[in-house]
Image 1: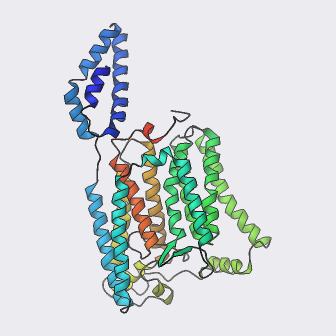
Image 2: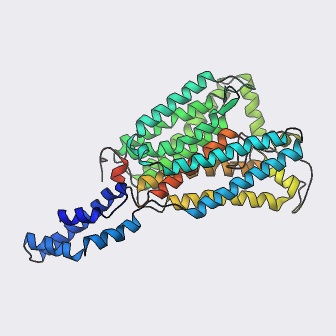
Image 3: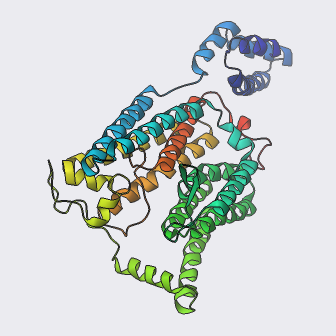
Length: 436
C-alpha cells in the first residue's frame, strides 16, 4: 500500500494537495482492507486486493491531479473587475457634476486606490488562508495591538477618534474593524470541541472590538461588529463545533447579547451615566431626527429628479452614493447598482462555501458577512428606514480605507475557493481539536 501511495502522490504537482489526497486514499484503502479481511482473506491478500481495486497508480494520480489543483473563479474576478471599472467611472462623474473644480483630482485618487485594491485582492487570493487557522491567536493579538497603537496615535476630529493621519494618508480605524469577523471565525475554529468553556472564550473575545468601536465613539459600528460576531458564534454552535446543547446555549448567548447593551442604556439614562452630549445624541436617535430623507423622495424612474437634501449632498460620493444616483440618473440606476453589489457579495459567499473544509467555509462566510452587513445598512440608510450612521457601499463608496478593506475581504474569499480541493481541515490547525 505504501509503495502504491508513493507512486500515486508523485503524479500530484500541487504539494499542498498531497497530504489531503494521501489522507483520503489511506482511509479508503484501510476500510477496503478491513472489508476484505472480514470476508475471509488473509491480511496480505486483503491489502493486495484493495490496492488492485484502486487501479493503476499513475493513471489514478493523473486523474486526481486534474481535480486537486488551485482553482480560480474567473466569472467572479471578471465581475469584480466590471464593478471596479464602474466605481471609477461613477466617482469621476459624481466628482465632475458636484464639484467641477476638484472632481478630477478626487476621481483620480479613487481610481488609484481601486487599482491598488484589485491588485491587493489578487495577492491575498494567492496566499494560503490556512495561516489564519494555524496562528489564529497570535494573528488576533497582533491585530488588537495594532488597533490599540493606532487608537493612541489618532487625533480627535469633530469629537471622534476614528481617524489616523500619517502624512497625506488618512486611515479609518472603523474600516479596520471590518477585518475582525474573519479573524473571529479563525478563533471559533481554534476552540473547536471545547464545549461550554470554548463558547465562553469565544463570547469574551467579542468584547474587545465592541469596546474599541465604543471609544471612537461609534455606537452603530459597535453594534454591527458585535452582531456579526454573534452570528458567527451561533453558526459554529449550530454546526456542532462545540458539541453542546444548541438551543439552550443560543438562548443564553443571545440573551446576554441583548442584556448587555440594555443594561448599559439603563445605567446611562436612569443613573446618569451618560454625559449631556451623549443624552442629546441618544434623544436624536430615538426621535429619528437624524434619519435622512428617503432616496426615493422626489426621484424619477429615469433621469434627473429633485436635488438631494443638504445632509446627503455633503457625502454624495460615499455614504449617500445611492441617493446621488437616484437624484441624477433615476431610481432604476440606484437599484441596478445596489443589486449589482449585493449580487457580487452573495456570489463570493457562494463560491467560498463550495469546499468541504469547514474552516474555509467559516472564513469565507465571515468575510462575506463583513461586506454584506454594511451594504445592507447603506441601502436602508439611503432609503431613510434607519437613522443615519457611518456606512459605506463596498467597492463603490469613496473612502480609501473602506475600499481596500473590501478588496482584502474579497481576496480572502477567493483564497478559500482557490484551495477548496487542496487543503484539509488538518492542514488548517496545529493540533487536533478535542472532538473529531
